[in-house]
Length: 402
Image (cartoon, rainbow, N blue to C red; front, side, top):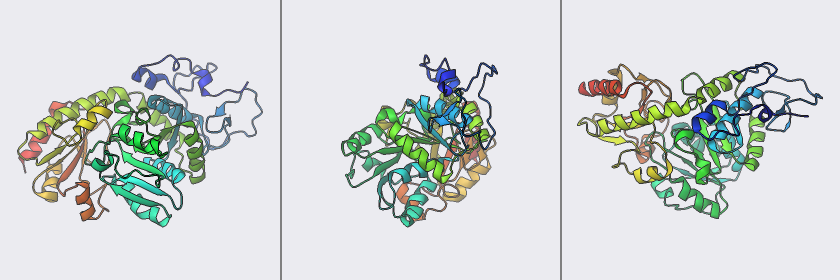
């Protein structure tokens, strides 16, 4: 009888807790080897046709594996682990978060399609939508998160609505449930980049979204050593998007999938620390006289705090804040830090700090950045799992030198 990975995983069907699911779900364990963790199937191709009646099946096709761009057991283990945390059976991995975004959006909105998106986007996504998509015949209308949260402008002429659960880098929180309720009435799918939240703090599909996408490079892998993307959805879109992945070739290699799966096992533990550090540091910054504004959903004074309370389990480890003096002052602050490294990424166990005007949004025109709420002195801080007392002391010292 043909088999798939689910046939040899006995614990995941009984698991209910997040950390138990993260640890055990999707693991490819074969009693003939007695392996405790999923092996790295570092192979480009497989025997095909495979006439063995016990051949394992690639879940993207329900047929024996044939080629690792199409599917691979190590990738499938990650995809099943991740999708189980998102509350669905259908997950895919990609060579990067952007590869996942491109596959999802081009599957739903091809040439002549229309997308309604928030304005406060991650820089590369913004460039994709305003640049390449226009060349490909895909039209995108941008709207501030606050307006989209009121479900303004969601009409039947859109192929999809795109948002970020927590925007990068201004941390505006989308009311995914309300947006999805209105969009579903008109038959419009909602795609959510939930990278900043992680599946621990939010499950977009439970809030009515059609697709949840992550840069798995960040919180999911969690150790700044992987470039990978993941996506969760329902069966119909899964079948369509996996065909796009196969055609575009944005499939990760088995080693990346193995590392991401290993990181995913500790996501719940890490997020608890990220959440606590985020709240502690945000409160400190909010009271500091050398900080103009703090962007953090957990602060009651933050503009989308009331939305955050409804759609997030925790407020995360991402904080942005603005210092007087613009870019020069922000760069000086970063230079004087001793714990956080200046680097254009986030979500790792170590703290990282960056200036969006120098990195993620450097290609966005200044006037557009201003419309997004990104000032020249805006600093994005990814809090790691260090002790918050040490992080605060380091920030205090750096601010004191401004």
